[in-house]
Image (tube, rainbow, N blue to C red; front, side, top):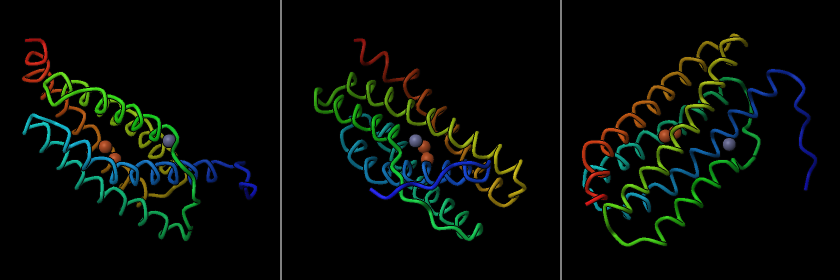
Length: 167
Ligand code: FE
Ligand code: ZN
Ligand code: FE
């Protein structure tokens, strides 16, 4: 494979982070419909489907940031997200439609959100330091959506699904 460019400045780190996030979001756009389909709870299903629509907008924001920076996104694969989604596939393939499966899906989905929160938090801080105000604003919007998605999943688990799974 072609030699990848060296990462030797904060700007290089920032571009790498944005590319990783873009790969992660693109993987989610592909995976979320299947995950939503595997759920039983209509509340969980709509939370995932609504986050899918947000995720498509998050992809657009990242593409917009690359355009503003005059850069083409380097083609890298977010192996962290790939691994999390493989674990999601495993949980679904080893379960039947049930509250227990829903509880497991929430567990995977919250790991995904926390992974994204970490990535966007760092990228926003780097955008700020580098003086990319527009990028910072867009990254902040997405970070807020990821945090809200995580809180919603938490509420659905605590208010309904965990106790149903435990019946
Ligand atoms: Fe996202
Ligand atoms: Zn990653
Ligand atoms: Fe997300």
